[in-house]
Image 1 (spheres, rainbow, N blue to C red):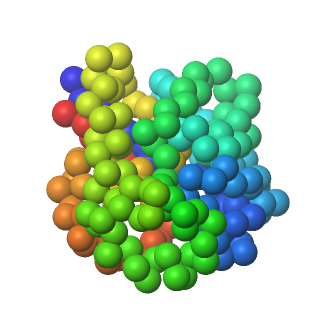
Image 2 (spheres, one colour; image 1 turned 45 degrees about the horizontal axis):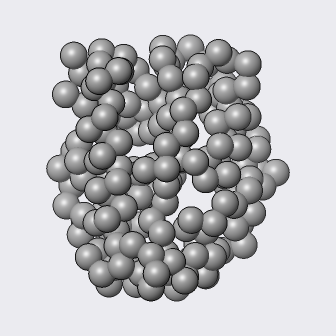
Length: 178
């Protein structure tokens, strides 16, 4: 049976507001981000979610903890849902990082990983879901790399197209894993 996947990005961080590309650094939610996390919880309160899967980076955990405090959903952390590891460039100016994304589709960032490697992590997560979550609706909180992994693996969007596009926030994306 298919698995319904609802994807939400972590809420706005202090780094986002300061224009930094956090990468594998923990990050923390800003005041605006904490309000967004509360809104996420309200938006998904009656959405039939069986479990919440979350990147193990602090900004995603904080989002999940605020959004689903007392909701009774298991919150399961998974490192494979992390953002791309920019290596030496974690925490660099976001505008600079994003202007060179295409250079790192297959070539790893210095002491980090490539976008294709990050997507492969997310695909590994997807491969493991049917063993326990078949026929259920789950929510995933992650990062750009997480969403790109879903878009690439589940919707067939070429990685080159994803890397070239600008990020546009919306209140969740929905996918189906057959």
